[in-house]
Structure formats: structure tokens, C-alpha cells
Amino acid sequence: MGRLILVLLVAVLLLPSVFAAKSPKDSLESEEYAVYSAIISKNYLKQGIRLVVVTTPTCCEVSKGQKDQVMPLAQNPSAGPLPSQETWESYVERNRTSVALRKLFKLNVKLQIVPYKKIESLFDAILIEEDWKTFYRMFPHSNGYIRFSGAGFNRAGAWMRGSLYGEGRYVLLRKKEGRWNVEASVPTWMS
Image 1 (cartoon, rainbow, N blue to C red):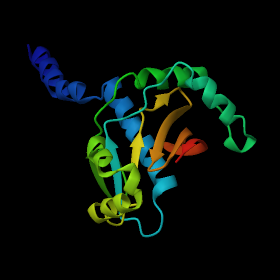
Image 2: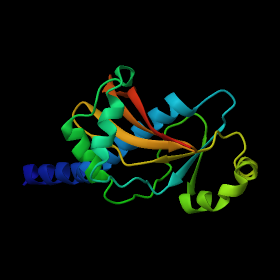
Image 3: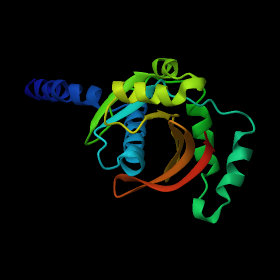
């Protein structure tokens, strides 16, 4: 009888930790935010930037011919390595639907997540210079806004698309010693 009680007590004590373990979805989400944070830290935190504005939801549904458009861009030797087929397929799958972003970024500056429709409503193609002045009054000490796609993953890396107010790019990252590092960045468009 004493052993049965001990086993039940151990089971009851271990039960919360079993339920607290991260699901694969939570783990993938955590990695995705680590990727976003690495990209922001590497590419968008310049001197004097005290605010990062990220739009929600994620963007960029993948079109059928998009891979064919991206690969020639990446043939530039300075662009670095290409995503694997596994990474590309994960990227396509993760961008079938948009996802609301949350404040799970790990940054050393203030973060503001703003609905993309609100940002979009600020800009009129005719008065773009005035529109940017309005934006910077609303979001002082930022360097514009960032829009992210979902990230595609494989065992070795991640591939994703992002844009900063007038430039779009694909970014290839690899995880080394527990940290995501940008390996290549391929511009896709510029306004």
C-alpha cells in the first residue's frame, strides 16, 4: 500500500510538468519569434532607434511562380546559400494563412505591434512625404515599420520574407550554438 501511494504521489507531482512541456506548435512559434528578433537585431536596429514597429498579421501568401522568381535573384554570389527544398515547402505551408503577431520578440528596444490596415491607412501615394511625417509623429525614434511573413524551417535553418517600408527581402538564417544568424539576404523589391 505504501508503494502505491508513493507512485501516485510521484505521478501527481510530475503531471503538471508533463502538461507544461512545450507542444511542437509552441516550440515552432518560439523559434519563429527568435528568427524575427534576430533579423530585427541584425538589420533594423541602427543608432538612435528606440522603437521597432511591426505590423500584424503576417503577410505574403506564396504564389506558384514565386520560387522561380526568387532563385534567380539568389544566384548572385554575394546572396549566399539558397533555401533547401524542405525549407521552401515549410515556408509555403506556413504562409497559406496570415497569423496575428504577439509581443514574443526578444529585443533590447521598445516594440509596438500595429495592425497593418492602420499603417496602410496612413499612406496616400500622392502625398507620401507628408504621410511619412505623420508616421514618424505617431512612432518617433523608429526606422519605419516591418512586415514579416511566416518563417519556413528545416533541421538546419530558416527562410522567411520581410519588408521594411519600401524594400522587401528574403532572409536565410542558420542556428548556431542556440542562436539564429542571418546567412543571406536577397532583395526582392524596392519602391
